[in-house]
Length: 196
Image (cartoon, rainbow, N blue to C red; front, side):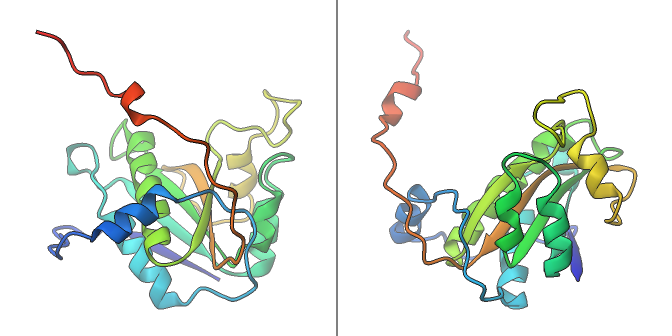
């Protein structure tokens, strides 16, 4: 089973900003590849997807589309798209393909990446674990970079329109796995102020 979400014209979230607890939770967001078998409720998915689609897009083009897959057999096939880095998808209760309409803008990849990032944060806010698996430009076989491509493999069994490019797949699910803490990172070393 899959659901398809597209940005709605003119919809703007005018809810109050999130509290500091959500900021802290987002700073702790980690890629998680272990999920409980518990399905993610459709209402939770709907909220997360709509929040992700509220992300900015180039010239307000709303070029990103989200394809939601919850059927275990379909997810298992998606997990086989690459021989590296995608096998864990098989155990995710939901997988979202982040697609971009190539006819809407030449910046569809950038727009899709912004939406995918918003999707990861929205999932964290909803208490879900998540992990991004890149599709665009990735070969099915790591040792054959010019061989069959993951995106072409997915098109063999999913109804992805020809004008849509697939940027990535995002696994979503509940998890009791607690990843190790991130090593310390000094954000100040990546912030640069021009001198006068």
